Image (cartoon, rainbow, N blue to C red; front, side, top):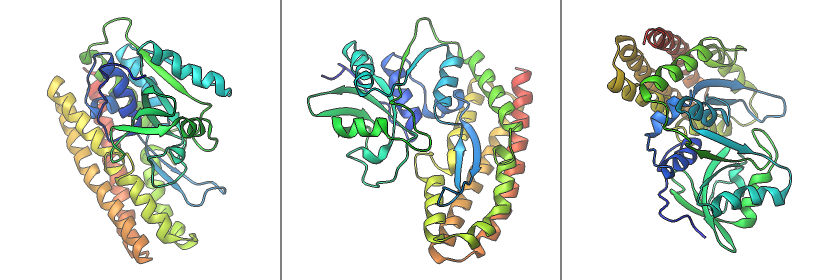
Length: 330
């Protein structure tokens, strides 16, 4: 069975694509940058543990938080279910589908049949809009294609995989019991909350402090790495192409600010947008320098990358300060 008249959301980032598909089915269409911004999506983290092969660099909030924030700001009702039972996990998917309601799933993309780059990542999201006796019909990001198919067995494996960022067969649905909160009210609230979180990171490897810390860790990372080509080319791919929308999610937030300015105006918002334009370009340059350092096994490009990261830290901090002042006076 498939949900009748289902139209997939076409997106670049997995969680906004999955959640956008659920909202679009309810009759609410928002752009992907708008979904990302309303979800307080922008952040940064530099994370290294002994069990990790190399540090992880990320540019968004923790998995699950984006959809939770988005639904809260718009007034939608979010129902999240987790279970260790395979039987209950299937019921949590099949029951809403039987009622014509698409379901968001968090899983490990490694097991999905259509993923050819077999890397474990358990913080991936898809939307499911149907199944038959052998396979499930999913909405995923490009380049996999908006409408993707995987076997029921592979889907079950993906949903119950353990590891970093994994959940216990997590599924979610969204309903709209009342009209959504007007954007005039939701946008300042989301921007204010995102700016406050960004400007007050709990530890020094998050937000602008984390970017500054990264600048100081690049050369030690390179010199201690067991495989500099893997480390830096893969990190460059994560920054620029692995579902971030480019420039480690800064392109999405830049475009979100442009949309918000078109709706609400404000000098501070316009200035912050210009700063995020600068930051997005600088992040693209950093990714290229990482890729060069990895491919050439040469630390020289990292000197320039470190300098750019210091500037990015200052730029993003200034932009968020402007956004906070704008939101507080709007």
